[in-house]
Image (cartoon, rainbow, N blue to C red; front, side):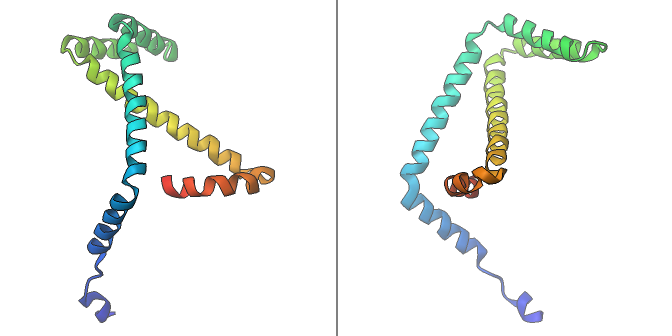
Length: 139
C-alpha cells in the first residue's frame, strides 16, 4: 500500500494528451457541432426576442396564475421579477438564458425518449447498434 502512495499517476499528462489528440483529429467534427448549436440557439433567442416584451410578461404571468390557482404569491413575484428585468434592460439576457433552459430541457427529454426506445426488447437489437456510440459519447 505504501508503494501506491509514493508516486502519482500521470493523470494530468494523460488528459492533456487525450484532449490534444481530440483537438487535432476531430476539430472539424467539433466545429460542425458548435456551428449547428450556435445557429439553433441564435434562432431560438431571436424568436423569443421577437415576441413583444409585455406580451411575454403577460403570458408568463398567466401561466403562473393557472399553475398556482390558490396562491397569488408566485404569480405576483414572477410579475414583479419580470418587470424588474424589463426595467433594468436585461430582457435580451433573460431570453438568452431561457433559450439555454429550453434547449437543456429538450435534450433531457430527448434522451429519455431515446432511452425508452432502446429499452424495449423487440427494438433493442436494432436501436442498440445505432444508439450505443451516441449514448457512450454524450453520457
